Image 1 (cartoon, rainbow, N blue to C red):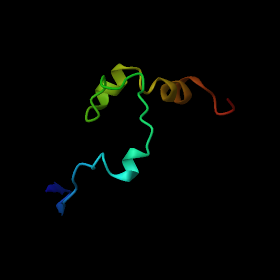
Image 2 (cartoon, rainbow, N blue to C red):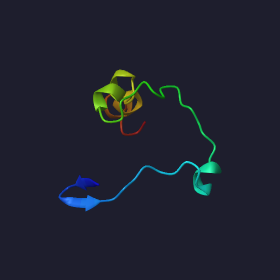
Image 3 (tube, rainbow, N blue to C red):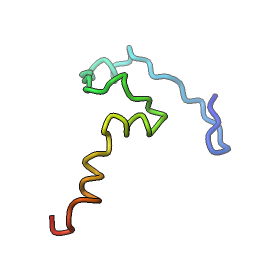
Image 4 (tube, rainbow, N blue to C red):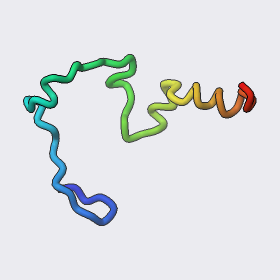
Length: 63
């Protein structure tokens, strides 16, 4: 059982043999396994927000 924001849930890991999952096509991305999904610094280290930074800091509103 997981407690989140004071509430409780019975979320469990998905059954990968369920038809919903068996019809999915797995896609491996370039940084798969390199980024810790619980640490934003891990994503930033791999240049994760580089495009966002460019848009916010280096482009004008007209661009």
